[in-house]
Length: 75
Image (cartoon, rainbow, N blue to C red; front, side, top):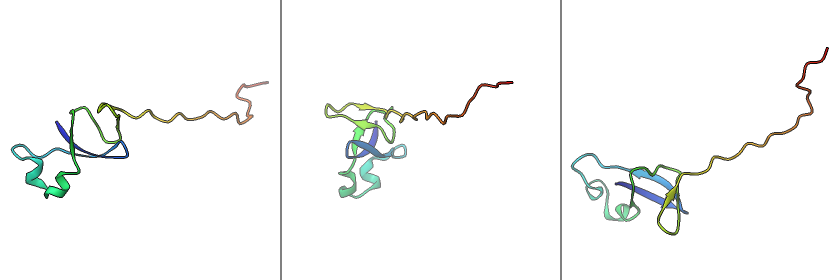
């Protein structure tokens, strides 16, 4: 499991303590309270849904703009 910090339903930060340590060994209680457990496949930037599931963000599409340039070679 990973420890994640979520703000506005977006995973902002991931923290995995070194082997043999717990989150509470690394931070004060107020900081520990900012984190929650998540499956190991969750990454920074993922979206947390109301049902507790996570999905990767969809990359933005890049619109194709017609520049009016003729791409065909004419002789």
